[in-house]
Length: 528
Ligand SMILES: Nc1ncnc2c1ncn2[C@@H]1O[C@H](COP(=O)(O)OP(=O)(O)OP(=O)(O)O)[C@@H](O)[C@H]1O
Image (cartoon, protein in one colour):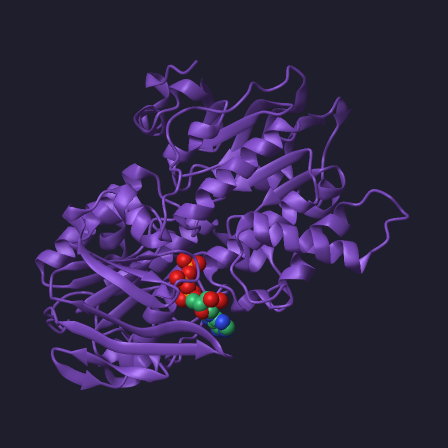
C-alpha cells in the first residue's frame, strides 16, 4: 500500500499528478497473445488474444463469466496466466504484480471497488502511486487539485475527506474512477465504468475518454451496456466461455448483431413497450415526510399492490439512501410509513425482511452476499430470515430443489450449487443476490440497480422475473440509472437533492424526459 498513513499530512506520492514533474506518457501498443487461465480445473480463458493500438478504444464484451475481468486482472498483475504472453510496444513484458503494471503505465478501474473502506477518498487516491521524492512525500494539495480537475471533467464534485465506507456506492465508484483516470497512463482499462451512471453522466466520461485517446492513451472498455460500447469504442472483441469469438469494427455492428455474437443466438431485446398489466388499487406502502437530513428530507410516495415503481435520479441525488431508510439500514429521523394498513418502521434490514420488505442492494459483494458461502447457502439465507413461522424447519432436499430451479431460472453459471460465491463472475454474483431475495417471496421488493454487471441475456430474464413478480401482487420499487430499463415500470418517481420532486407515468418515462427532469431546477419543474 505504498506506506500510506491514514492520518498523515502529506500523502505518499504519486509520480506526480500535479503538473511539471509528471513524466510524459505517450500511447503504447498492447498485445495479449494466447492467454489461458484455469481456476481449479474450470476454464476462465482459453487461448485468448487481444490487441490495442495507441489512442484507440477496444471494447471487451461477453456474457457473465465469459472471462473479461480475468483478462483484465491478468493485465493488472492481479492474476497470473497459465500460458500466453503480453507485449507492450512489441516487447514481451512480465506483469507479476500490480506494481509491475503501474510501472508500465497501465491504469485500472476494476469492477469491484478496490478501495480501502476506512481511508478517506484522498488517501485512496494516493494508493499505488510511487514516490519520486525523498521519503515518498508529495503535496497533498497537488493531489486534491488533480482529483478536482478530473471530477470537474466528470461533472461531479468528488468527496475526498470522508472515509469511503460512509459514501454511497455511486460516490465510491466516482473515487475509484477518478483514481484510475488521474494517473499519468499509457493505457487505461475500465471495467463497467458507468454501472451507476445515467446516460448524461456517462456522456461526460466519454468526453474524458476522447481527451485521453487524443493524447494517445489506449482504452480497454468493458461493459454490458451494449449501446454505449458501440458508441465509445473503435473495435469490439467478443469473448464466449473464455474464447475470443471475434474482433469487429464497432461501426459495423448494432446492438442486435453484437448481442448475437455475445450470446450465440437471438435474444429478445427490451423494447419500449411499457409494463405488462395494471397494478392493483390498494396502496401497499405509504411513505410520508421521510427524512434523514441533510441527505434526505420530506420524501412522500405511495406504492400500490403489484406496482412496479421506478426511481430515477443522478449520482448523489439520494436514490440509494431512500431505499436504505425504507428497510432500516439507516434510521429515519422523521416521517411515517404504513404497510398494508399497519404502521411500519424497520430498525434493521432483518426486521424489514420479517415484514416482507426486502432490499436487493447495489453493492452485492459487501451487502448482499456471504462470499465464502456456497450459492445454495446464499440462496437459502433470505428465505430462512423471512420466515414468520416459529415452526419453520430447514428441509435440505426441498431447499436443494428450489436452489436448482433458481439457478436455472436466473441462468447462474456455475459448476455446482456448492460452489463458493466468490468463485463466480461479478454478474453471476448479482444474479445470486437477486435470486436470494426473490426466494423469500417479499410483498415489497426494493431493487437498487438490479441489472448492474448483468449480461444482455440475463437482463431480459430479470425484466421478465420482475414483471412476473408484480403480476403475483408483489410491489416493486426499482432504482435504476439505466433509464431505458425503467420502461417496465408503471410509474417513475424522480429524486433530486434528497427528495421526490414528482412522478411520471410509465408511458411518458422516456430516457430524454427523465434526464430532463433529473437536471431541471426546482422552479422549472412541472411534473405530473
Ligand atoms: N478466483 C476465482 N476462483 C474460481 N473461479 C473464478 C475466479 N475468478 C473467476 N473465476 C471463474 O472464471 C470465469 C470467468 O470469470 P470472469 O470474472 O473473468 O468473467 P466476466 O466475463 O468478467 O464476467 P462478468 O461479466 O460477470 O463480470 C467464471 O466462470 C468465473 O466463475
